[in-house]
Image 1 (cartoon, rainbow, N blue to C red):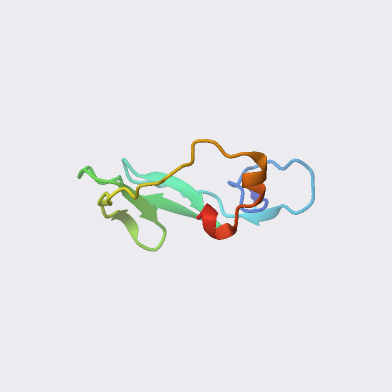
Image 2: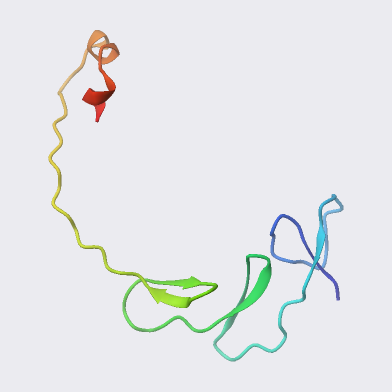
Amino acid sequence: MQYWTKNGSIPSTETDGTEGWQQAPAPPTEVPENHEVIWASGAWHILTPKPTEPGTWRWYIDQGWVKRAEKVPSEAIPITIPEVLTTSQVSNLTTAQLI
């Protein structure tokens, strides 16, 4: 069976008849249990199961599953917002005053 892809789309056995379709490899037929097959960067990849350890995990083609570092909340920066500005006050604002 022949597979086709266009602009990096997930390969399909059918096209819509427009130009630009390229032949693509067939997806793997032997996939270990609990693994997932995905199409990324122009190739099929077999994902190992996502780790069960708590945290935020992201899968990378070249690294596999990587746990993201937890973000430490920083102190909030107080923002002063004027109550009301007239049209003439807004039109006279400079870039420095907007930051």
